[in-house]
Image (cartoon, rainbow, N blue to C red; front, side):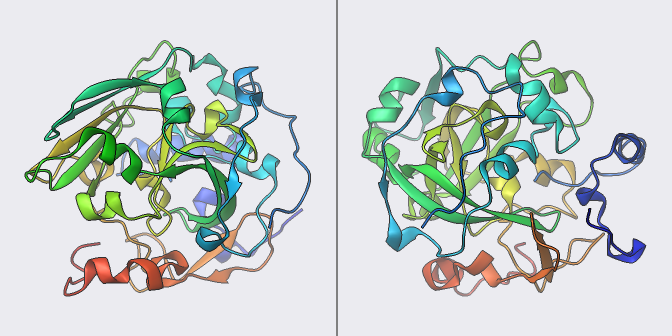
Length: 319
């Protein structure tokens, strides 16, 4: 059992029922915090949301040039410690509650400033480009992190399909809104559906992953099935889950957390250890499964690949 001094404990690290209920009371009066080679065996137990769909195997080539060399967290870590408010505020609740999500059939609507708008089904998405396994760092705004072997392909493959126009400066993504499948949407916590967005050059960067699986399988429901985004140099709330629409826009799009708490969550959300969240430091992080905290890396360790996207920008102002 991990025991910390009271001053070292983050609210985001506590998942007991008592503390979860305390957090809900806290949320009622304040702006809430954001969501946010392989090693080890595949641990497939412990999740009600592990359906037959979530055990479908995926064949993916390992993409070493896009992968970190740090050992991934276990399958159990990755699938039982999640932010997915559509299924509850506790880290353990998505794994318990996401079995209600139906991921087949599933379509994604692509619209806005594109030459070839269309609706595409999940089976077509799985075959749109060769699947790759990429071991990425994943850093949550709440100062915890994991290493995950995601499966998918660069989001730019989708852009090639629909051909954005010259007016397409941004991309907005939309999560499913259906409280019968996502019971957390019956709450007041956020203004549903969940919305996120990127600048078009961020979306086209080869590291930006249209994610369809992890650990050799299609995504489990609690991890954003059947399709999500992974933007590894940004805080986790940018990596939107269970996507049903993608809109290309000329104007900066609305995003859920920037609207919910503009003083705490900016549009860009690049991992920056020098810019603290108003209620906690971002200078260090807790890697799930480790005892000691780690120093947070600029752009989550991907500065060599992505820092050039932000040349000339004040990253304290555009946080």
